[in-house]
Image (cartoon, rainbow, N blue to C red):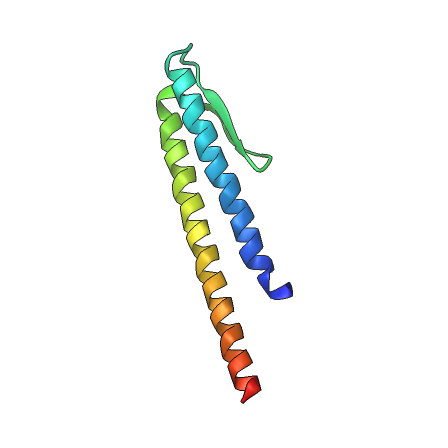
Length: 95
């Protein structure tokens, strides 16, 4: 389990980024028909921007989507490498 902490960490952060994408996408739809003052954006308790205009919300959402997909791909790649290494180690120890 000690070897999998990075895969788990990247999976959790990528999930949070993807959830933020869906949250911003929903807020863009609401703000697009609302007052137009914009919103503040924070991620994992860190404020990224305190006032994003309504027309720019989707740009931030797409950034979170890209970030989340890159981290998810990295986590999957690391998991595949770990599994292959463990299979190679098991094969060499049984011989």
